[in-house]
Image (tube, rainbow, N blue to C red; front, side, top):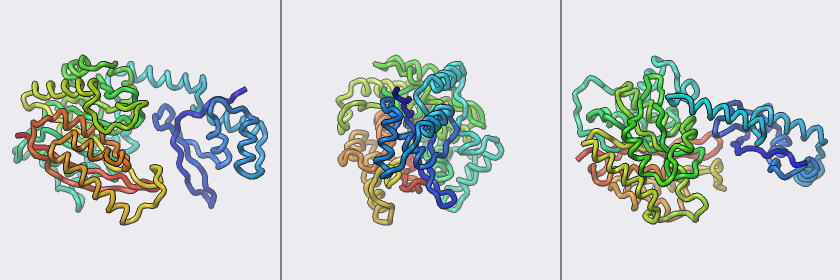
Length: 412
């Protein structure tokens, strides 16, 4: 009888007492616990495709190791361990996922999933943590909320979605610029659905909780956008539950304004599912119709809205599938291409941005490709040329770098 299939998981090696072990975790966080597996246990797990039987895995292990044999009991012990913790496609996981989905659907708000994990959940500790991003040597200086607005308002802001610890300076420069203009009434936030979704955009009707308060959703704007969708924009609303790209922007907005700003949370999903890589977005009428609706909502606000894109840029190195280590030449090459692409962004040229990134089929894995495109299309000439505030990159713990930037587009 075939053994159950392994779920889609992330894995990375760790060294412990001279031995290489493999840590596996659930990127969708239906299961928050991580498991540490021996190399043999991980090999067994990796062969669980829903078709292999015990004897198949025994044979594959024998071939892979040049003679290592595992008993049926050993294999079934690994399978039972994975199933017990929710890592297999099985009735146990179905029950786990159903409970998580039902709980999320029943809630009126979207909890701050990463509070206490990626940033402090205590409001005072969080404020001190974020204050430090602004006052560090590479930061823009403290935000003075009591000061009179000193610059034009920001109609669009591009900020990172990497964690605060690594991208703090770029976050600080971006949101300091937002704070120097007039406060937006509503922020349309385009994020990246890292968990994936088989539709172009996923909306959410739930307010986003933060330690500083809950940012309510602009229900009228969300309804207007939902009406423009050729798909059900709420069918995959669950992807908002753990996605950090909008959560981090919500935290920063609440840091500046408390719960005084409404949001329109939009995750960018799969525009090219099952198709060849797209080099020209103009052919996708369903995407164009949705972004037309975004522009209409933006215009109807009479300047009361801004657009945010919570995005990172390049993902390069062995962690992301490249066959090379990161050195100065690799960093310089990434920066050169990032700057080239971002020049199109600064010119508010959405199609030029998309074409520039895709001229090498997005070899750098720019995860913010669609979100930046959507933000620029929504802006559609309602702002001046962008202000380049900050560029940076940070190492990935498993080997590689992630680049990011802060850019503001002042109102005309």
